[in-house]
Length: 320
Image (cartoon, rainbow, N blue to C red):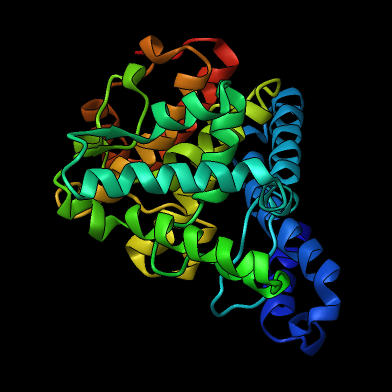
């Protein structure tokens, strides 16, 4: 009950407390955003493991690690939306190498668009530039966290950087993001491959889920020492999807009994991207359910399947 009350307090603080909307209360809103997410996930931990103090403790510990790494900040309930990895975002923006990367990336994607390149792989290009997997993953997760028309990370940066040098950098960054908007990617007919070659799945199979793959894979990497590292990002993404699919705020707290797979296949496939990325970064893809198996089980009973995935972590068994 205390967590439920905290959840509703968080919603009130974000939306209705005047001080929560002023720029000088940034730290307060950061605190509220963090605790809203933490409370939602902790409620699920209680639901899954109320019978076991050991697993409940491991679950809430994973939540704590996840929300710290997320470093989530929501300035308003209107655009621009919330941003993840607040401190990483500003650090990368102030890193000269980041802008050299964007310029090089833009040149390559424009060459593809002009017919000078036949194909392009975002992951392989980024890995080649940054030289190591962790750095490449961080850049893709942080800087490409929102490739929709909202571009929340872009708007956030524009609020705090207004010098002439940043103006030129924003021009390049905006063009880069426009090439990875889902509308543009569809026009390219999958010439741009978004995911690692060794993943076992292509953009045509997974869709344009940059957020669901890279952000959640990065989260898994950063909390990998936690028992539920491979499933906690999936749970968080699922709660959001439940809300979007049902158009009900109550779905932040409860799961639908079942989901129409034919109608919501794309949404569920994006959740599979989260599940896949967690196993890929852990070198355990061979131990997970296939795309079709995941979709059918998740659609048939989201609540039971998510519980099953959590219980698998306690037994060490990842496959049927």
